[in-house]
Image 1: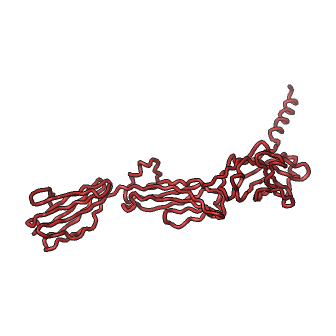
Image 2: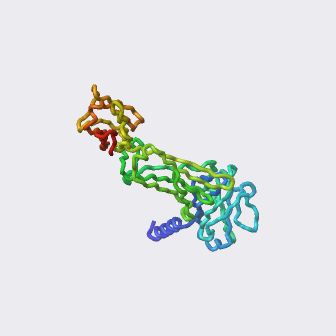
Image 3: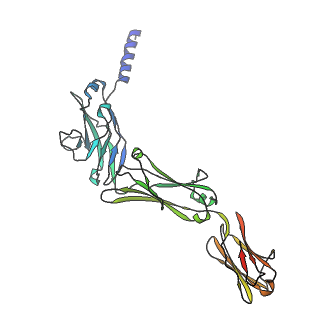
Length: 347
């Protein structure tokens, strides 16, 4: 093969590579909520020779489960011919090769494979038979996902949740795949106000963050995120939740005055995670059971402990009594002044 033949062959191959053909870009599968809408993102390409035939008057058709005009046509964008069994419209500009389409009020019988056809002037008539989009009509919306972040780091393993310490910066992120809906769906965090989804982000992922500084009051609290779709005939919802577990230093509950009769009876309640220990100190020294003192303990919960101490009257004239609670995260104490006729407690 001489040089001239090589050049001719190269130009032919280059022309073949660069030559445009009919093709279409569609999502492989779309979920649609029953009673709501569906948006099909769609772009197509045509052979270059038909560019002049793709004008503002171009029309689009959608077929379901086949490409027969008589048996499978479900939507025709031409307003002059009523051949549509599905409500919708092509929101993209066909002249710009944008065939994005929205269908409304989908029902279970709308589930299937959908094919697109473009018609322009002169000989531009083409059905894209090789590529279709599958539409699945579901009764319930996809479940949102709640993720826990501690100090801006995601907690991957739920077992690690017990490592959340009081005072840490906590963020709960709820994310949800959003389906076509009007009005758009909303997210609800427990009792927080609803967060509306703006029109511009309707087709994107919906995200809501709940941020707080962890306190012992949130230990074992369940936070629920709910996504709600307001449809004409009913509301449809889906939920996800997470229970936050905290570790915190002991907290001693405010105690009333000790009870004094022939003996003095004092109580001390502490709450902490891990569950704390309780000790009694009399005049600065640890107290144990003896002929003049009696100590009892009662487990109130997995994190709570209650202790009582009974003192012989001879020990209460010039003494101070202290309840001390400890765990690995710290300690707390409460002081009882026993010198007066009525014993008082001081935090």
